[in-house]
Length: 309
Image 1 (cartoon, rainbow, N blue to C red):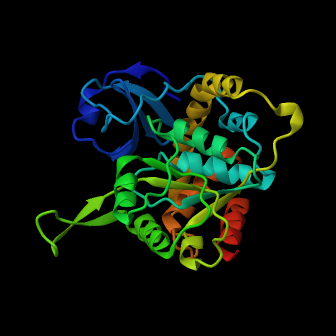
Image 2: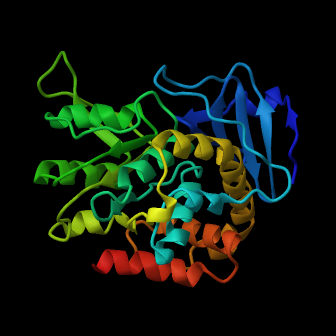
C-alpha cells in the first residue's frame, strides 16, 4: 500500500470531480481540501498534493488527512454509536461506497427509538464523508428548495422527520436513480434545464415508509439501538474522541476500497437484475468482501430484506 504524500500534477490535470469524488483512468479520487486529494487504485491508495484543486463550494470544510500506514480500522466508528450487530457491515459498506464515483447510491434510512443517538450517527457520517458548515438539514417547505439542497452538498442529511409527503418521496426516488434535477429557467415558464447531482441522502426519523414501495426499493436501513448507560458521556467528550480517530476510520475506508477495486471485476455483472440499484449492490458486495472475506452473501441478504420490508 503506497502511503506517501507526493505531487503528481499530471494525474489530476484532466480530473473531473463531481463534488467530493471523481474518477480518472480507472483511479478514484476524493478531495480532502487544502490542496490534498486521495488517489485510490486497485490495491493501493495515497494522498496527493495538488494545490490547484480546491473544494467546490464555500460550504464545504477540509477533511482530515487519513492514516494509510499500518492497519487502520474503519470499524472504530462503532466505538461511538450503538448500531444493531446485523447492520454494522451494511453501514460500513455504505460509508465506503460514498467514495465510489459515478454510480447511484441508495438512500440511507436511520431508525431507532427516541434518544438512541440517531442524529449523532447521522452527524458523524456527514462529517466523515462530507464535512460542511451545515451538518443536519430539514425538508424545505418548497420542493424546488429541496432540489437546491441536494445540489449543494455531497451528503445531505434530512434530520428528525415525522414523515415525507408524496411529492418529496417522488423527488427523492427520481433523484436517487437519475442523478438529475430538472429546473425551470428563470427567463421562461416552459424551458427547463437539467442539473447533475452526484450525491447521497441520509434520512432520520421517518415514521412510515412501507407505504412507499418506490422509496423502499432505493433505501438501505440501519437500526440504532438504545445507548448503554455505562457508555453515556458528554457531547463534548464524544466528539473530541471521534475526531481523534477520524483519520484512522477514514484511512481504513480508503484501504478497504482499494481492495474492493481488485475484487469488483470478479463480481461485476453476476448479480440478479431484479435489484434496482445493481451498481451499488455490486460495489457493496466487493466492499463487503474486502472488509470481511465471505461476507458478501450476508450483505446481499440484508439489502434484499430491506427491499422486501
